[in-house]
Length: 176
Image 1 (cartoon, helix red, strand yellow):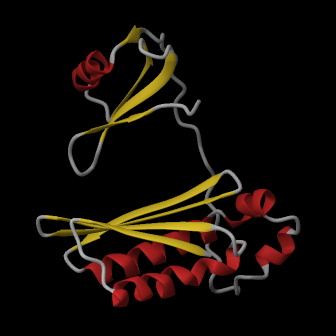
Image 2 (tube, helix red, strand yellow; image 1 turned 135 degrees about the vertical axis):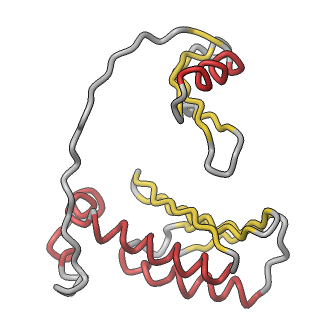
């Protein structure tokens, strides 16, 4: 796997980079050698945050974990990443591998977790109103949800604004 390791508000040491490669390396067996892994370390006041993103054949695996210790956050994110793969192994096997049986054999019986069913609880329809981002943020706060879908007047495409866990807002825009 190709590791792209970066830091925000932190000076990365070789020891931290090596530890990241070894911890995230536990999931290498599921991916091709050319797969890129993006690991970002950041520090915000007393919070240490590790973001791990793997894009593989149209599937995105992403984990964001925070702790007071960077190494503990990395350990936890590695465990969560492996659990994501194990939990969804059948669906992923159909998409990622030509031979799903090979994928199933990668886990011993005690490692296999019960795959949960995805249940659609509610179906809601709404009209998309063209608006700018500021108006969408206002609407987001008025409805009290964590996200709001709208048509952006700048590019006439469907966008989503959302409230971030760390505070502030984000926007999702489709690629050109």
